[in-house]
Length: 211
Length: 211
Image (cartoon, rainbow over all chains, first blue to last red):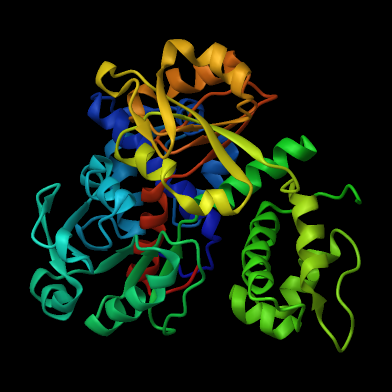
């Protein structure tokens, strides 16, 4: 793999290719034309070729892509050729939805732990995972091998949750709270903020322009 | 407002500025230095100046930004100087979380309708909204003035939900199902796919590089 700077949007498109290729693979389809793959992904064929070119030579001229082979290669590039172990902080409505989000299970992610502050939630089972008190985080992160922490608490508790995850040794964080979090440099954080997407949609509806 | 092409990432940053400015405004803070605003947003001051320059001249040299004034201007740019009416399709765990997501209420969004296919869900009240059958969508979208539809159904039903929303006259769609949706050209769609963000995080964890 070449070490060039890859735009983050290209990484997101690689994930979209993975989703479509998995769908084709499940249907038993072995070869896909670049045009068909482009339609499935909603991305134009030239963009797909350009994105893949960052990582090497894929596809056969006049034939298309071998589904299993391309899937294998892209998953390797993204680091999805292993199973990632997730820990959730906050089992309110959103946290519960995430634990039950079966799509994760299809794509190499497994919840192995869930934490909450509220006594009435401790010990309940959601999606097969028993909710533990936040005080058990240090121990359980190590025992269960949690690699990525998902934060689904309210904005006011999100920074405390991030600090606890970092202290427990979690390297990657997905933050669902609509607030900016401070995080040490050697840790990675991704923010999922619905309302930012809604704002972008409103801008497009207001101006009538795609952005 | 000048009609230049604004990168979509700049629009997202404008939303982030709105969040931080609202926080400052609530605390009664009238003026903020560009450095302080940058810290709050986790974005560097030069980037903030560049983003705002797309839309005009903001801030006073040596003083900073007037909080209320900048908030008002950015909200106008984004089309957030009005209340947007939301309709939800699918009141499973995720849909329920969205209906109860109080952050929306703070930022100019209101749910006015919710729909589901499942008979046992019809008539229940979630977050003050009574769940209606999908057959009532055409009528309720008009009656309640739904402008944006949120799709929180499973992947296999997402396209049908989008088609129904479009038919009912909804112009903007937020899709939470992890699948690519077809949509007429004059409608706008934003996808919120958690697993794409997770994939990006795994790529960063695997390569050790920020993207």
